[in-house]
Length: 547
Image (tube, rainbow, N blue to C red):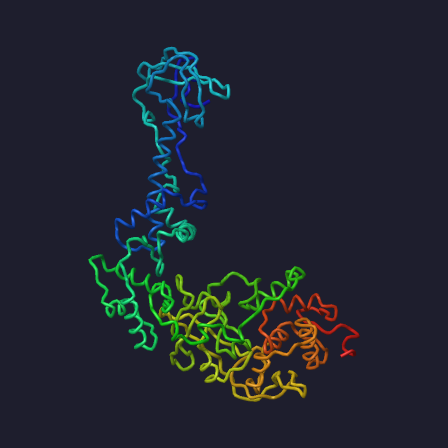
């Protein structure tokens, strides 16, 4: 029995020390499952109007959480009040009266009888007999004025879900994502460089201002220039605060297709779109890929794991991004030829990103010479452009190993190679046959950097190879036959006739941009190809002779 009950009839004593009320709390997963409501939007909109300053999603999350907690506490109090008269030891009650009992998990009960209580440790009080809605009967004290538990708590002390500091710290990532998605659907709000503000209150930026901005960037060879510099040149003035003025000009530039915001997250830099390198505005020929309808369902977990380890940025089976300060990639021919690097799950967190910009300009330092040059992250194409001169200066070939390292300086990445003793080594080499097609041979070639043996392919005449990309031959059997033919040619370089899937992946990509998964799917499903273990394949028995 609850210790508040009159539970010892032999000496008419009663123990009041153990009473515990059911305190009001929020559901455990309240913040994980938060849905932004109309009342939240109204509050945030009015808050932005009041402070007259564009704010980040994270800053708005803090205000949202604090406001939600105030509202939820109010709701909890109102809920308790709506439950009807709540039993407290100090009150007096009538026969037949219905009460709510927090100490019994909020159950309702009816007063069946009332009689005097007798306990020398307490002043006079009554004992009420109540019957709860679950038919249990209890005897409780009433009319007891002096008791610490006569004040009903409104919310649970120590409920971390009602502690703004705890909620913001614990659930910041989840709440920022949820609020960001919700705000994106609001046409009355605009976001620039991660900051939000009501669209209707932006300062007017006219065509003349934008033309001056274009001329300023033109004089700077297209840019990039910070918003502060452009603001000075366009002579945009108003009586509003400086941050709102800057935000308004940023928004006008963003809405004009002539301008590109190319700064990394946290920095706003503007560039003229027409002045950007062609390979930044349009995906280079060697990186263009048309998805194939391959049956990847046939891939085993082992093969899917292999595809993920290859880290091809175009593969759907790519793993979640890792968070390393340095990674090593082997250079695929299309990226070598285009002067690019892939943005994949290995290096994505090293390269600079932006809040909205599809293109980001940043600084690359040659880790071998400490010289600096410009790079571009092209988010839609999943590649980094600007590496061509580096590849030539370092004497790289497809398959060379490249070290990508996070710099201590914001907006900068360090890229280097590992030099090897310059000598001649047996390297898989792509040559043109008498029929104009590609043939592979093992030839001694000069090498000055470390490389991945399975990925390495030397191209003596890449300009001639370009013809296969600009005017690809119409091969019978399409892509599947290309896989079979390439496997057959590479098998001649191995006494056992076995070819590793990674070798085939590298070889096919000198003729056609193709991620790993479609190649592996063809290997495991084609009747002419047999898997021999450890990711090695060969032409099935009887097919070699038919070639």
